Each structure stands twice: as C-alpha cells, then as structure tokens.
Image 1 (cartoon, rainbow, N blue to C red):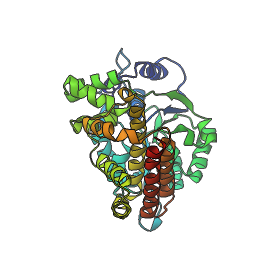
Image 2 (image 1 turned 135 degrees about the vertical axis):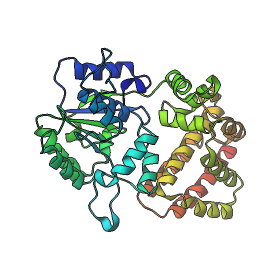
Image 3 (image 1 turned 180 degrees about the vertical axis):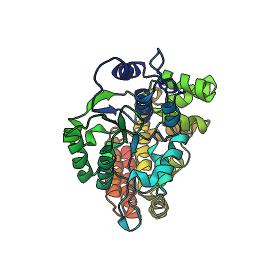
Image 4 (image 1 turned 30 degrees about the vertical axis):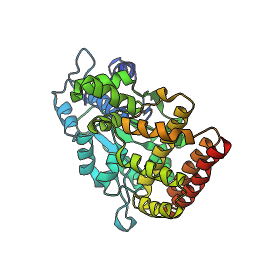
Length: 382
C-alpha cells in the first residue's frame, strides 16, 4: 500500500512521511483515529511500508519495488504483525489473529479500507461481536521478544483497539509502558473513546478526518471509473465514508434496499395500527441476527431524523436516494416535534437491549407498539 493509493488526506500523509523520513524519532506507539471509512488502516499500512522500504522516493512514497515493498503488497512481510478482532474458536478455545490470517488477507485484498461488516462475513458469523482477546496480547509479546528478521523495525498494526478486552488491554499496556527497542505500534480506531484510558494516554495521536464529498466523488471517478453524476450521488449518500461510497456506487441508484423496505413496512403498519402484522414483522426481523438488527436500527434512526428535517422544511440538507426521498415526502408529516425524540429513544433503546442479548422479537414488537402511539400523537397534536 502506497500513500498515493489512498485518496485525500494530504496533511495527514505529510505528517506521516515527515515522521518516517524527517530525521526525527518515530513514536513507539501511534494512533490514527477517526470515523469509519476514513482510510486509517490503509494509512497505517502505507506508513509501515515506508518505514521498511529501502529506496523511498523523493516524494516520500515507498518505492513499491524493493523486497520489503513486494512483501507488504503480498501481506507477508515477516516483521509486520497484524492484530485485529476475531471470534472465539469452537468450544471457546483460545483464538488469535493468526487463526484468521488467510481470511484477513482476503478481506484486505477485497476491501483495503478495513470494513467491519465484511470482516464479520469472513469470520463466518455476521452476528458475532469480535474482540481482541488476552491470548492475542500474549502472542504479540512473544513475537516481539525476537529480534527483527529482515527489517530495521518490527511493526504491529492493530485494527480496532477499542475491541481489546480488559485483560488484553492491560497486557498491551505493559508493552507500551516498557517499549522494546526497534518496535513500533500503529493502531487505527473508529471509536477512540472506547479504548482503555490508560492505553489511550500512551499513544501519540493523529486525527484522520472524514472525507469531503468532493474528495470522494473525485476518487470514485478516478479509481472506479464512475461518471460524474453517479460519483456525486454516491459521495453525497456516504457521509464521508469511503466504504459507504463504494457500496452506494455499486448499488447504482444508492438505494438502501432491504433496510429501506423494512423501515417502510414498520412505519406503514404502525400508521395502520396493525398490531397483528407488526408481531409477524418483529418475528421476521429477528432473523437478521443481533448485528444485522443493530445496523438496521441505526439506519431507522437516521431515516427518522431525515424525515423530521423534511417536515420542518430542511429536506435539502438530507442526502437521500430517490426511493427514500419519495417515501419521506409522504411520510415526513407524521414525524414532528411532538414525537421525533420519542421515536429516536425507542430505536436506541431497542439497539441497546438487542446488543445485550435480549430476545429480539419481543424487543422489536414492544418498540413497534410504542411507535404506533408516537406516530398517532402527531395527528392528535395537530
């Protein structure tokens, strides 16, 4: 991975290049923090490749041709250690990143930005809550106890350190408190506030911002061959997230597909006070599994906010594909100042309960019944 393969982030790239080539001291532990889809994992990989490259260019790019660069491209540079969330083995057996090394390489080959939803599919369990376990920290410590095989520095790239469990985080803390010579950690986090504070305080941090719509649209045209209109539409729908922009482009019209259909169905049945059908809807929705339901509830919350914006005459601020916009033009009059907060609260409460392993169909049915009352509150108030 070279910096030029990553769109935008010129200032972040400059800082990383200067850090490696500027003659200063590389930090022992660096954190790239920012929103999902900001390209942080790719920036970490480019930084590691530049550190190992034996012939960097005058522009601060890895050469892409030396032995180390070729090894990085194939994900087999022996002094680069990848660490990432995994699921426990059968029977709860000890599990480390090494157990999923092949899946990790395939995931990065398909999606270099680091896509957690895609990673769950490669783990073979889209309803799992992967973590970095204590065994992983032990494995990293063992690997770092050996001197570098072929490069000037051993580098640990850790994706999503917020998924460290407490035991693993405390073991990692010891490695950060007593840094080994010739070792560097590069961590990339979507939710840095969830990192154990004692670990977070020992990291040198660089903020990686979300992409602008212009940056994403230009990249979709340059790298994906999209026409200008499709690129602008996908960029507008993605909220600064490269992964979401790619998905929106692949969907052509940016339709939210099944999630949108399920949202429409719930709101239609709630408006009709069709409790019996909502009970069937809840049972059907439960088949999405925990992580699928949490993603849908986030989507439903976002759609509710967009409908409220449309209700108060600010729909021009909401990027929506045509099908969502057409629905919202009809439905938004039922999402008002009298019930928006309540609907949001029900959706968020359901997400919390489902994340805590409550029985999904009961949680969803209870939520849907309460949304019936909230929707009709808008009519009563008017």
